[in-house]
Image 1 (cartoon, rainbow, N blue to C red):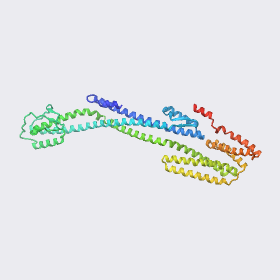
Image 2 (cartoon, one colour):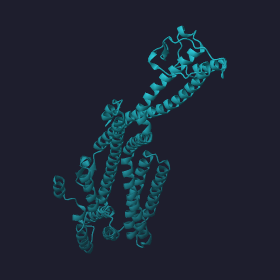
Image 3 (cartoon, rainbow, N blue to C red):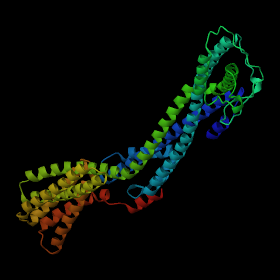
Image 4 (spheres, one colour):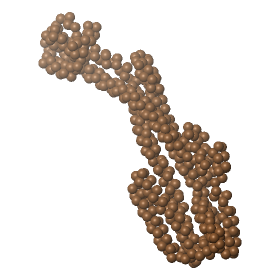
Length: 479
């Protein structure tokens, strides 16, 4: 569109002038339309990319914890990739979900920035062209005003001429050329004889001379008096003055037809100019936002995940801490105490990580609050350890701890907290192994061994749920 506009700008004169300006405006409008489409396309694609990154984070979290609808998330991921196939390289399947290819994300964003820069350059060139067209419209107004001033001066000069000679001066432009040392207009030496003024002058010669002096001063850029004409009498000077002004008027009038189409379309040109500048500003803002979003995208996604994990862990902490406080026997206290200790450790670590990400994102207040929360949970863990140190442990206590842990697995599974349930499963296996070692040492009674076998079956019931099937995972990756 820019090249077509440039071609249209070369058309001048005659009936082509109106067509030319119409072509120019049409070209300008097309460039603006293309730029708007580019801005929308880039905005849509970046919104889809950011949404895709967040969905991958949500999917992986749901896959790991069981909190969230993985099928619904996957469906939305597939929908985005179908709509924007160019984003397909951004995500890859892994054994436990999806992975974001950060280098691809950066490459896509940089390409979009370059596309925006190209359109900005087109718009900047076009804005210069539009401003040039607006100047043509201003020149129409300037010429119109100048013609009015010349008409007024010619009319006044004609009045003086008639008062001095009793005749009306007929303008003859054939004896005037267009050259002078100053680029103005010069008159060839007059051939007419000096006219004798009538005795009853209505205007004095001195008034006419004052008018001539003022006119030369007003139109000094177009009135040039050669040395050979300096001795002209006032009548011949008026003839010269009228003819020079008339010739300049004719030139200005011829320019009006050239400038008139721009004047007629000045409102459209001003509208296009405003649109052009608005689009340039929008592109600048979008480039800045793209750059900023790239820096914060990973931080924001991680922050959102941390917030979900923290909310879940804090909920479980309150639930199991309540069970710990209600427990009467030392065995129950120790069982729930170990679960609460593990949750406190996770909370402290997650708040430490959150503090780091918040600091990277520039959230100093949030980072400080997260750091304080991490320390508070570490302090709570230390206090819990002190409470549990004084509790005596018997084989019966350990067996009861194992029963309590297995029961807690069921509670966590029903609550939909897969991550907590999996950790409890690992704790139960460890407790079972401790008791099994005591069995091989001959330290367990037969009744305890029998109960231990039953508890092992309960643990094995969760094995399929919490043990990764490597063959199934490999098949998923191949698919």
